[in-house]
Length: 338
Ligand code: NAD
Ligand code: LMR
Image 1 (cartoon, helix red, strand yellow):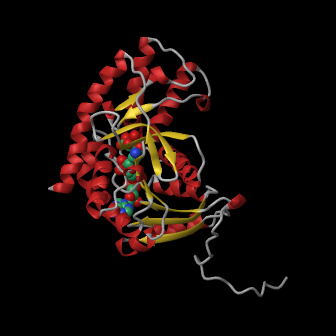
Image 2: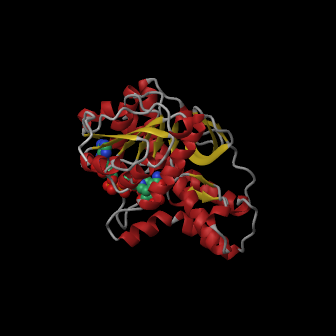
Image 3: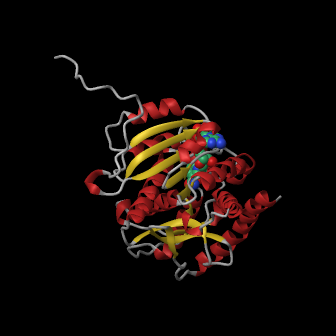
């Protein structure tokens, strides 16, 4: 057989389809921190998402390799790689959804707040670029400490005059995934058949599973409530210790982030009734940011849903969560106004 006479296209220049499979709109998605432990599997999962027509992979290291690798998957999305700050603008221009897992992970013995000094600056820089290059995009923020990085991002967008609280979403989906998994284990059922709301924030006692609001409704003994609450709050540390210095949750986090991004994309397409837990600007408590269920729509978190009825145990947990959360939020705001 002689080779096809068709002219060869330069690598990476395949035109992006404007419609994804099935005639659905195709969205442009960027992953910032795409070469990292979360970024790589998350990029793979986003390349598998039929709602994505263009996938931009940005990092300060190793994006050429990750991009070449992911781009060989025979799914619709066109993949382009961007390396280093000079290519950040090109990575972000025209994006509909920006997912940010850039930043240092924990090692054993560290709290998420110990990452603040390194990651606050990274998040500020990346969000400044989002404000300039794709001010109308929806942002899914993963970098820790989420309790502080989301307020930092909000301040960046306020300073730039682009802030829309609906479009800034802190990703707490991994807490929900863990809660569903651990509760299903206790009940002896499939995790896909259960939904556990997790509210508050994303660190230690600020992670507040609402076991009284599990759907479908089920009851737990006091021992089960104590075990489950501690295990869910400690899920990240459980992984950090098991990895013994090699980082924190990456695979389950990529899975959770891809699930949350898919929910955002379906909502952006116009699907109704999409509700996820997320850490957002909120009037549910006296704190300016709080994670609860939110109803996602074309513009992001269209509605922040109330906490619902809490039992005494959860009310006590809420008070502890609020105290720590307030300090983390203020630390983020102060960082931007010093
Ligand atoms: P990692 O070190 O494996 O990867 C981070 C990546 O970010 C690296 O590739 C690094 O080069 C990149 N990076 C650093 N500075 C950058 C910049 N200025 N611009 C773009 N990219 C930059 O870490 P990881 O395991 O992927 O974790 C990433 C972050 O996600 C950590 O802060 C971690 O604590 C957090 N995390 C959050 C959750 C959550 O539930 N929200 C869960 C797990 C991890
Ligand atoms: C997690 O919950 O797994 C992440 O926040 C990473 C960590 O440091 O625990």
